[in-house]
Length: 129
Image (tube, rainbow, N blue to C red; front, side, top):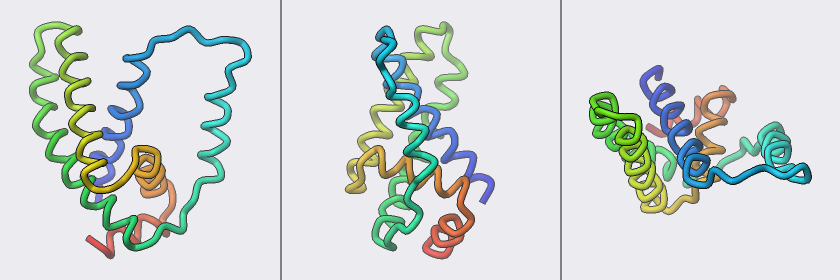
């Protein structure tokens, strides 16, 4: 279970960081996107269907493979720029893996977060594995 939790946490971090690195746009005073995201996370759905959880498990297995493929490359990168480039490549591959599992990124991230914070969701996922 710990290996899956670490893998999920790493995957979320990579998936969350890449769009932020790619956009790097200034924030306006009227932008409430961060607060809205936090509010949404606090009222997150936890009653996923078995089909959704099976798609998540399939995606997570692929993401683990991508993460394992890139982690050594990123650690061995000879510059910060090269490491960021590799992180973006890994992120793109993870997005493809999630989409190939017939999921969207927000749903994948929501289930991954629920796995980390909701014992009910974690137990259901582990039972399906």
